[in-house]
Amino acid sequence: MSSVYFQYSNGDFDYVTETKYEELKTEGGSLEWISFKQQFFNSTLLARGEKGFEDAVVETKAIMAPDKVKGMHAEAYIAMDGTSEEIFPMAFYFGPNHYQILKSQGHEMQQLVPLGWGIFGWVNRFVVIPVFNFLNQYISSFGLIILLLTLIIKAGLLPLVYKSHISTAKMRILKPEMDELKEKHGKDPQKFQAESMKLYRKAGVNPLGGCIPMLLQMPILFALFRFFPVSFELRQQAFLWAEDLSTYDSIWTFGYVPVIDFIYGDHVSLFTLLMTISTLIYTRLNNQISGMTGQMKWIGYLMPIVFLGFFNSFAAGLSYYYFLSNMITFGQQWVIRKFVDDDKIHAQIQENKKKPMKKSRFAERLESMTKQQQQAKQVGPKKRK
Image 1 (cartoon, one colour):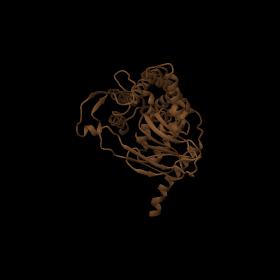
Image 2 (cartoon, rainbow, N blue to C red):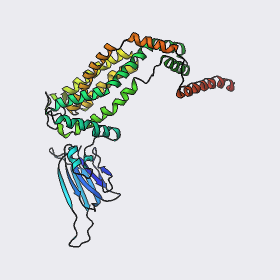
Image 3 (spheres, rainbow, N blue to C red):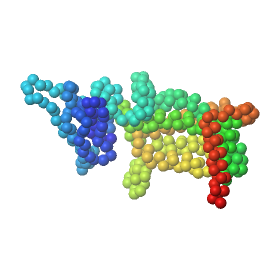
Image 4 (tube, helix red, strand yellow):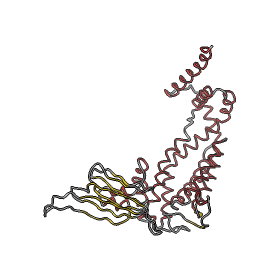
């Protein structure tokens, strides 16, 4: 997370790639500021006047020393007339990569906090950070703040979770009829697809209904994935067995073991382990609800195990959040299943089947394409004869 960052006078922002050493010559105008940044602190030189730093060259390089991360170098020029009265105002900022503090400095310095691009950055700026800062005014324990933040997010997503559960329940109820269609038209994928869509329309079921709510949750998950490792507030904040929520929570450091060190690391992070176990349990429950079978079922079990090695060295705050999120989801599903009656859903589906079908434009186009493909299949062999 250590590199050289800089901003042009026109507002464009750039940096030297963090994962390799390289030299960059700035192009496209003067620079408003140049910053040497690491995970939680930065040293920044700012041009305060109308002119900026010209013809800048920035560089990162390796330093073979146990107490050094990397070397950083910047060289720039100031355009001067040579008169005795000319002034070039500058300022230094030495301080934390705290989003609100950097924003108050002006010059778009908050860009030094990598909150993610596009919608992920928006979620962090306008949802996660305001809620986090509000809770921090009244609560000193960051473990409790993350708990409340998780509860607020899960409460906001509850309608989506409910819709996803209902859609999954409908798909599970329709599974016997889908199996019949597969047995009947399994050798003709296009016919099977057309009949499946017909069944879904008659039953009033959206086959993507269970996926769309989950996809809408993804921006929040990815936003928090970027937020926790760079959150200055979590630095050196302890909770339970975790000594620092901004880094991994090792309960056992077993040292270097070939292959295992590359895949998993040299320690056991308990929050990550709890997150993985709870995700596997969630996957099992979800498979039971949806009736998932075959290859997709086992991929669902494999992914949490793969991510175990990745999250093992990540911020404990993030693993703690995912663990809490899973546990709250268990509670939500238990409550929803208490109020959702499969018999009523089945009766509703049967009633929908009796109603006249209304085809959407998309359904009409899909049906037309399927018919054309079937006709082409039938005509094709005759032409070859």
